[in-house]
Amino acid sequence: MTITTDEAITRRTRRVLVVDDDPVIRLIMTVNLEAEGAEVVVAADGFDAVTQALATKPDVIVLDVMMPDCDGLTAVAELKADPRTRHIPVVVLSARASDEERLQGWQAGADHYLTKPFDVQVLLGFLNDVLRNRTPTAGV
Image (cartoon, rainbow, N blue to C red; front, side, top):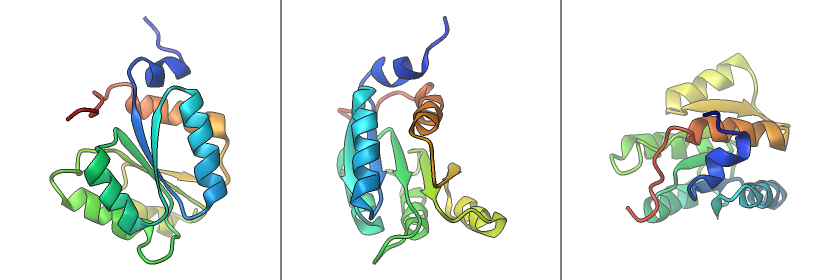
């Protein structure tokens, strides 16, 4: 049986943590993910991302790099160092697109690295690929 793009998210409720300091980007991702049936939790910086990940146990985290106070790479490193969150896939979504910047993302522990600007449908398809084989952590 082939699972379509929307079915992977809606098959079971998936919790997605969206982390970006830009409220417009957070809103765009939230509206589109919720339309696909996902439960969305948002954070505006790396500190809040770590706190929200521990509190809500998301199935996947979509995280910007350039944020005030605690940047995304620092947050990824903290998430991957903690046994309570290291299993959660982290998708970095950043305007930083050079090979060196991508390498820094991988070195920090990112599971995937996508660049801005992004097409919402491409991001949704990509997240569905990431979630397709994951068991939701809601209720854990």
